[in-house]
Image (tube, rainbow, N blue to C red):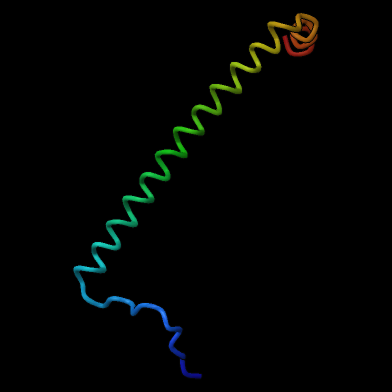
Length: 70
């Protein structure tokens, strides 16, 4: 089965263009993963602060947890 032309731009075959595209893709991936790592760290800190606030504002819950796990 022959591949038909989709009408899009041709895929570059020269090495410098392919290297530039590969480097651009690596930079984009690095930025995405760096942001995801930072957002994950912020989410963990917010969860810990929220849990501490929940226990601080509900002493009955804190006593229940201490009696169960302490």
